[in-house]
Length: 262
Image (cartoon, rainbow, N blue to C red):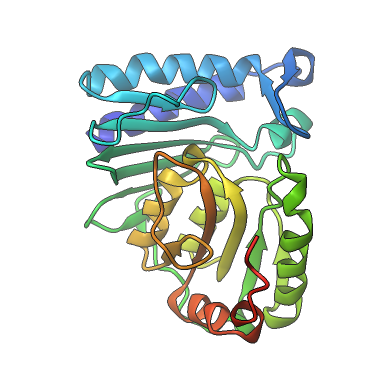
């Protein structure tokens, strides 16, 4: 099943690479800088058709559609056809396809492809995480020796202050700060040990379902900002990091003072 999902994702990546002038085929959804292109829709429609051939009994939960009727007890594909749509529109090349397969509310398979770089991240529960066939391992170093990454939850202006206050703290606690614009890729970079800690105060399940399994299978800790488990049928905050960096952050005076409570 993993190989079949990877094959579908690779072919979906071809649709992204074939895009011509995506800025001319863009519409705006609710919220600041919340865009959808005809390519988001095309990739999602393609993946829905191909993935449901692999597991016809599964439900399909995609960003460009209605996920309100999701049934947590049923198997599901949780899909972001283009994570990082604004990057895609601007030619920033930090965009990806993210596909997760869940059973009983837990992610069993995660696949993330950046078609621009050819980096394919994937994991199967209990079997480790890989990048183009190479096993991944999250960093074991402390936060002070690592990069930290964050997302700004741009559709939620009420989260601007807490997001940047947390980033300001990490600017001093970590080596430096990064912002990519793709939650799925930030999770994969956490899995690869490229960054030690990643946070965002509001995401949807399709943003993190696939990447969270990849990070966890690489040895990272992945939770909500308060340390509680993720849900793959309801959005919320996300904190991921190598074990040492994660614990450094969670035990910091900044967190213990309640400053991460949005």
